[in-house]
Each structure stands twice: as structure tokens, then as C-alpha cells.
Image (cartoon, rainbow, N blue to C red; front, side, top):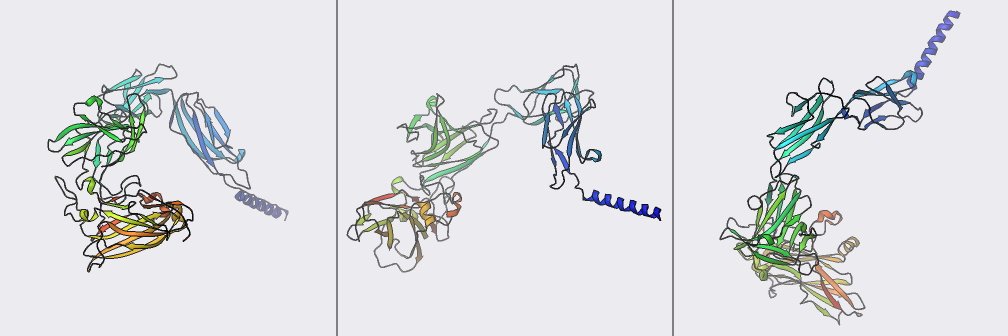
Length: 560
């Protein structure tokens, strides 16, 4: 009977031990951050990840086995360990978890330490440029000082024996290369050095004349006026991009003059041009575009220009070249010719006269005095002091004559068919200061022979006032075929805004046509419309200038 008791007790004890073992958390961890080969004297950093449990503290440790058979043991209480190996050969890093008498091997990795170190080229170096002699020298040193022989393999070729510490490579074409190096007779992975050869200048690709954009820049630039916008991209990263300007005679087919930008008042903004003879090459200035211009854009109009970069003078001083007050009002015969010179990282450069240039057309649709322009008419603004009312006309000068043309744009090769001459719809947002209250909109009979449908809406919400600086009235005007109104036709006036003056003291009213060139910057205000003009097919009518300069009207306050 006693024998059965002891058997039963041993079974119960084994069961309890088994349950206790199952209830203990199991260690888990991995080693990371170890590369395959290091150079003697460099720092090796070993990183690891382990799981720590709240109710049970599972110990972990790192064991590093060195080539001479010794071991370095580190309690894995941190997340990394760094040391400098002193021996050449193979190392093993092991991660253990659990108590000392019951450890589990969780992860193990090997790495090698070599006595070889590359001297040149730098890893990832680009070799080439106009002064390169066509030779790539790969050099290294043996840090232990022991006499050894080497083997190298270039770009996956067979191994070659060499007893010197450098190799010259010649006749390489443009491309990426790898050079492998090891000590002869030593069984370990080779050192690898990557480099590339580049003797080809960057190629620039242009997309020009994108005048169909509905929205361009901000209020400092005529959003839909006479401009040339062109973009470029490069076949590779560009270190420097230079640009300069010429006059080009389309009848002669060559450049006939050089153009420098001039800052006449020294305020850092170019406001004039200096025309040089074509022979004055030494005086002709380059302008640096310095914003890593692998892909960029330039906008030029008859009034302004935008270049994203800097002008560097002979002393090394730089002047920002951004919006300028000067434009290029050239004729159909004389075009603006822009030469680009691009340099890559090793100073291979394009030929700006053969491969990188843009010919700009600006004056093909109308002369400056005939520009179709939407604006707030300050000259015709009127203050009625007795009734405390302000009358502000919104005008469209030269719009009807511009739309009546059969051809809106043409050059030697094609015609611009962006829109037809049949105006269908206009949408004009006008911002006005909060010392005014819109009481009425007096619509004019603008287009003879068309029935006009008019509507307006005011938005004085807090978010709009915060964003625009005032309340907004949206003017909507549609044109349909049918009986014309009986009122006399106005040549330029679309509508007259009638405001009540709120202030009892003297003040200034501020009214302007709203224009925002890029609503993606302000997603909370994406519903604020821009100026829109469309034809009878719903296509955007381009070429119409929106004058969104603020009109300031002083008035004397008084009780109504």
C-alpha cells in the first residue's frame, strides 16, 4: 500500500512541475543591426529586441564569441552594445533567454572583421566630368601590416591576384560598378566598394506654353493674362542650373540681341531691362537657379517674370530672382530666347545653344492697350454722403472685342482652340471690408443680342472673413440666346455693387476681386470660387486678365 502511495505522490509532483513550467513566460528575442563584414578598428554596434513580461522578469544575455575562442557576455538589459574588435576573423553573436541553468538560444548571427580598408574612391562616388582622364584608381590598405596577397573581382568578373594595394581601371563607360576585394587564402566575404562613372551632361526636357491652366499663382501675378509658363525636367540630378536671355529674330532664325535684368533702385527686385548687342558676350549675365532644379517651372509675362533662384555676381554676392517687375513685351517677329546651362554633380554641362533653350511667345493675342481685363473700377466709384451709400462698378474692358475674334492665338504651326467666342457663364467673387454692407447689385445689360441671367450671393461667415479679410459677394452671370433686355447696352460695366457705409466716423473702404491661385494650400476654404469664364461648351476662356489690386475708397462717416 505504501508503494502505491509513493507512486501516486511522484505522479502528482511531476504534474505540478509540468503545470509550473507551462505557466512560466517563454523568452523571445531577435538580433538586428549587424552587417556582414567590418574593417579592423571600426565600431561594431549590435542591437536586439526582447520581450519583457510584467509578472515575471525573464533574463536575457548576449554572448559574443571571438576568433581566438574567448567570449564576451553582456546582460541584455539595454537595447544595444558597441565595441571595437581587435582581431581579424569570424565572430558569432548569440542571444539567450531564461535562467542561467535553463537558457534558450533565441537568435545567432555571424560577422567578419577584415584588415582591409578602401582608400578610394568613396563609397557611392560619382566619377567623371570635363577634366576626368578616363582612369579610375581603386586603392586600399592592409591595417595589420602583415605581408599578404590580395584578390579582386571587378563587377562580377573572375578573381584576379594582385600583390599591390591599388588597381587602375580604364575604358569604363557610363554606369554603376562594384569592386570586390579580399585577402588571398582567407575564407571570408569580400569588401565591396560601389562607384559610378558619368561623362554625359544632363539633358533638359521642356513642356512650354501651358496657358490653359485655370489657376496660376497668387494675386501678385496676372492669373489669366498674357504669359508663357513652361516646365522642365532633367535626365539626372542637377547641381547648378543657369539661365540667360536673348532676343530672337524669327525671320532671320537667329539671336540678334542679349538681355540683362537690371535692379535700378537697389531693392533686390529687377525692374528694368538692358538690351546688349549680340557681340557683347562678356557683359551678358547668367542667373543661377539653385533649388535643386531636377524639375521646376518658369513663368514669364509681358509684365512680370518668375525665376526660382539666385543671381550671383562677380563678387560672389547673390540676389534673389523671384517675382520681378519687368516683363517681356516682344513682338511677333522678335521672340524671347532663353538659354539654359545645366551642370551635374561632376560638372558635366549642357551646351545651352544647341540642346537646352526655350523660345517664348508672348504678344500673339493682343497688344497691351487692348488687354481684356476684369477689375473694380476705382475711377467710377461714387460715394453718396447723404444716403451713406457707396457705388462700385465691376468692369470688363476689351472683353467683348477679345471674344469676337475668330482666332485667339496663332503662330507658324498651330492655332489655340482653347475656347470659342461664345461666352456662356461668368463667376466673379468680390471681397469687401467689414465696414460695408452690401444692399444691392445693379446689373448692366452687357452683351447685345443675349438674354442675361443674373444672381449674387453674400458670404459673411467668420471663416471667410478670417481668410479673406472681409465679406465676399459672388457674382454669377449667364448668357443665353434669345430676346435682349430693353436697357441700353453697357460697353464695359458688368454690375454695380451698392453698399451701405457702416461706420459713423471717417474711414476707408477696401474692395477687390478675389483670386487664389492654389486652393490645395487651403483645403478648409476650397469652396471659395475663383474668377471663371466659360464658353458654350463649358471650356475655360483663357487670356483674360484679372486685376485683383485692392481699390481703396475714403469716405466721411455719418448717421444714416
